[in-house]
Length: 155
Image 1 (tube, rainbow, N blue to C red):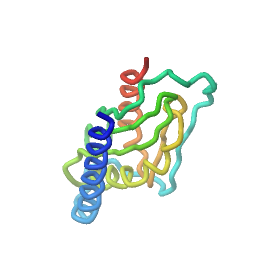
Image 2 (cartoon, rainbow, N blue to C red):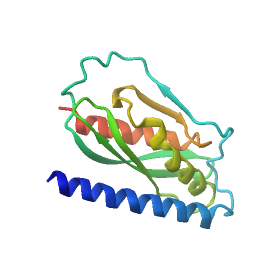
Image 3 (tube, rainbow, N blue to C red):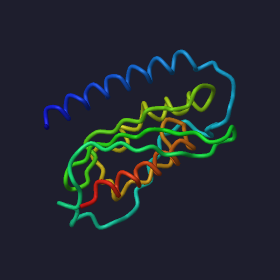
Image 4 (cartoon, helix red, strand yellow):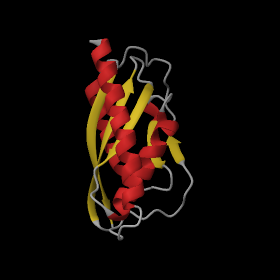
């Protein structure tokens, strides 16, 4: 089963990267539908928490959840896939943009391109993302999905 999960993860990751890159180039000039960001720096806020007792609190594996957030153009959705070890440490992260165009797709794609660098190696218990690659609103959907994954992966 580990080989199947690993193979499936790598195929999903490859597809997500290709889709994100293609989307970024194709839709970067689309009209504004909201989700405007105010800065271009990456920011991840980490809640202070005692993580020394994390070992064994989670079922290691790959988990997928959807999260929604509100932007000036309405409601948007992102799909988040996290791979966790049994201590709750994130070993891989993928965000799949679900927006259909405009600035929402552009900012979701930017967020997806930078999220792995921001969260891999961190504990899921300490995670509270506020902005990635200039996208501040997408983090609301990401954090909602992380909450769902945290609940699903807990033992």
